[in-house]
Image (cartoon, rainbow, N blue to C red; front, side, top):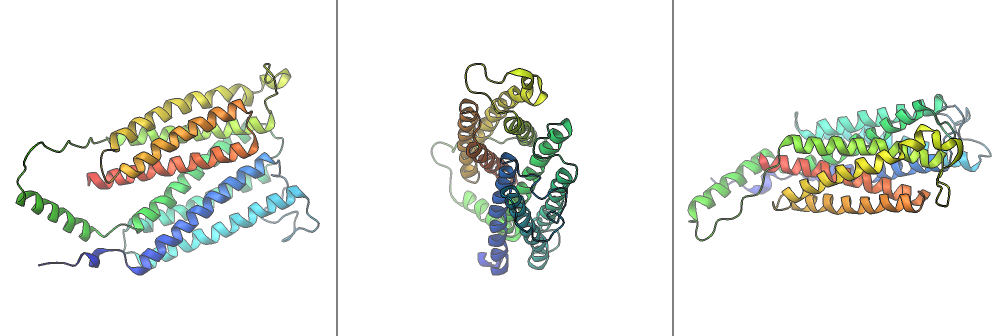
Length: 331
């Protein structure tokens, strides 16, 4: 019996949900980059030690520039929270129990709550502006790793919401097997596409998290202890600070992990289902290496730090999506 393939495609409501999740992801990336701008401009204490209010007020009166920047970040973060709250509610209405879009939309909401908690902790504990403590370095590293998990969850929500149902995949598999049985194999065989073990994906994803954590610490050091012009670089007592001494760790770790990402992308670039994300991962890895080198040569200007952070998030999303596409191909 012929079954219409359209019966297994996402419904109109599910497609609208996927578009909403895409808007949320784009807005989330903007909030993350703007949060880095708060650090670069030293505006983290723009609302004092009050959270979620600003100087104890719902709307600050006669705000300074730092207050405007911090308050804007809080407003956009609050709007993100509302969008994240709507995401699992909508997913529960659109998708059946056990669907991946439900799980990852709920994970997105949970990680947004964690993100807000980390931001509140930075403010309430005065780990902002000129604070150069170990505690702040640890928290900003965890902060950035949480944003990676958050964008990964949001991206997987979109991917799974846009997928055909299991019935469509089963029907397509049966059709391919039937076509393969009906058409005799003539001539040279099609080269087999290499399979990548799960541990290789896990290693690259964990490595990217480690690079992000070290990058957050390096960015904090670049903000608090700018590299001096000239061949001497950082001098004086600042050169002994751990944030300055740890600068060398990030580029070394990044080079190793990017090489692993290139190898992973190369192995999966041959398969039609994974080619697009493999090319994206390889291309973004190269761009990120160039941006990292420019950061060192140009002494980390603010606009370049923001670009570096955005590309890091896009690279991470590419790796997560490549893992999902590879898993689906294997299945």
